[in-house]
Image (cartoon, rainbow, N blue to C red; front, top):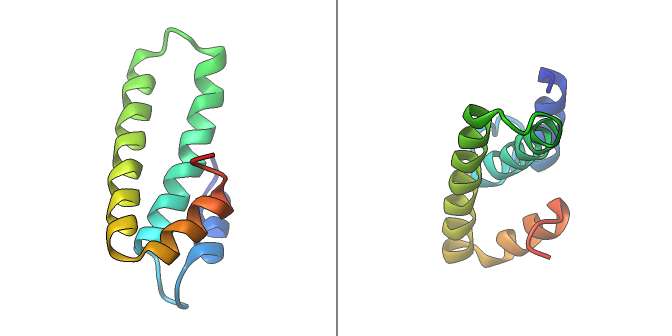
Length: 87
């Protein structure tokens, strides 16, 4: 995944001009990285180190989503709809 992809995602989900670390941005970037790594693991089934990293990213995203759901439910609903997670 190139740097351009993450900067585009950051710009799409940031809350203000200098926002790079809000929960929304972190969830969006993690989701794109998870999607990329999932595609990698489809062709490289024996890459266990990457699989472990994927599991860690999913758990980290899960934690951030739980936090957002608990504190600001409207933002939580918006981000899961835009990212297409939690069908």
